[in-house]
Length: 103
Image 1 (cartoon, rainbow, N blue to C red):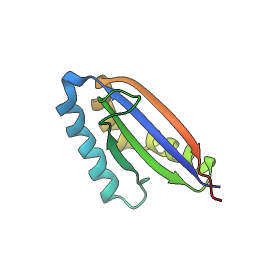
Image 2: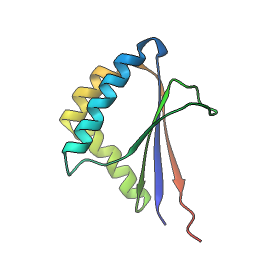
Image 3: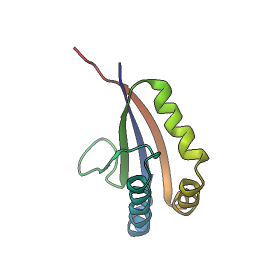
Image 4: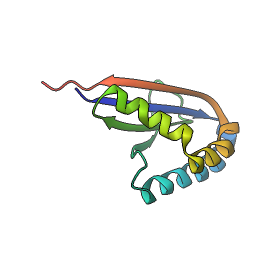
């Protein structure tokens, strides 16, 4: 059974440009490194979360693989350098896990 992990990052709306500029650098890092977990980025138009929320989502073979991706992020120096610049803009971060139903 596969797992979808979603990272929801609510950011300071007054810093949207700065936040998104840094998010583009995360996407470039992801695209340029074969070892990097790949995900899909979405910005809310209408949902239960506020519009100043960015969602990063990816599917994993199991829950352990999803946790390994989180560990990878926290241990990767390039990711951490960008995270240090982006984290002051965070208002809230949530991580969600979904069991993908395969009937």
